Image (cartoon, rainbow, N blue to C red; front, top):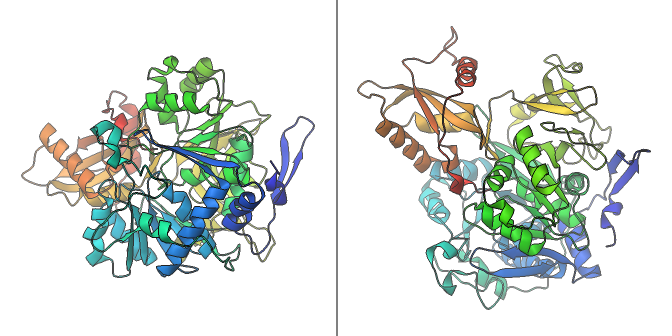
Length: 596
């Protein structure tokens, strides 16, 4: 290991060995693909970068040289398709290894990757394509997402190029009894071709492309990646990041996840459509010259995860609390998890009972961390700290973080307020700290509402104890975190009201032992409809069809009227208070839906 990260990071530790200073710096033309992945590929071509496998039994081991080779070929192919610097490209590739080729290739071209989940429906997809004026989409053939794209074409005038990746079984072949044709190809990487009217075949085109790629000029300040992030009012916001976002994940991988650079293997369970994938399978890990494990599964089976940890001797592990709980509720004691040296979690609040049960099983603490689509990890438990069950930890030394009240004043110990990150750097070229979003793309008003008076306002509420540990309280804007997913009530409500039986509705979160929170819909019915189990199922199925299935309300409560203010605004606080009082509500368990 050459300790490449030291090119970009300055660190100091106190007398107790705790990180006291952590600063990042980079040249104006810094590019993650060129300066990290390609640099390692040239210096240490055989250094392992990723072990990829699927339930069908296929395995590929990629070195950094492999990633350079395939990303160079992919970049040449995408350039031939007209992808240029500054273009936004929608990428829906589940956990296929092609995601890494595409992400690096777009970075080399100076284009912006826009990852998205394969669970999008027509309404979701059309909004994303149109709001960002997407010209190119690269997506998997596994599941229904390619058909969803085709169904949306008439509503998406900017979309010009569709590129299809044959994902093989996509984790489904092992369960359907499919033969070898379900695999990604027995003759090599990207060997499985596909034909679909109106689409280009990614695998065949990349294999045919030249691997002689000429480096292009890019700038670190160029937009690099953009995510759609759900909110409670309006449609999802577009969160735009520049290249400093990749470097900021040194805090994620080095100090929070503590990945092992030589002889280790890091495993983060996350689909590439979600931000946690680049948190745990890409930027920080490769900056640390570490190897990642990727499992291209279709549905979460805890015993499969345990078997992978045992088989590949995973050294560091990251998963949302829901998945830890599912693992603990499985036949986990039948597997050897002793290779794990460090375990972390994020995405939901970690319950003390889960913290303790994992410690009793493995002897390890779960190091909780906090961050958002707009940031990397900002508050976390790191080396030298004693994690407290239920606490997110302390602010990472990379950031100046405080808890502020409604007037922007620092909160006292024990007082609940909003987690805020100071953004005044005094540097014209880098006005915000590394990793903090550039803006909500094409939404100056929401950007100004989040970044003002010298602070980035996270919208998340917490309090701080006497030792400086942060304790999460919840969102100040009602976003629901369920099984690691962020669900905007507005998105669910906008679908619910399209059902003929629904007159009015309000979506809130209720505590759920397995998921953290479950989606609940309080509904006022139209005349001629009466509450029934059949109607409840029909409404739930309707939501599953019209938007991503993980958003559907697991609980439906029928009301004569919704509580409102005098000006007609729904009083969700009243509904939430009733939800908290009613601890008898049961929720259906559906672990097969957890995709990470």
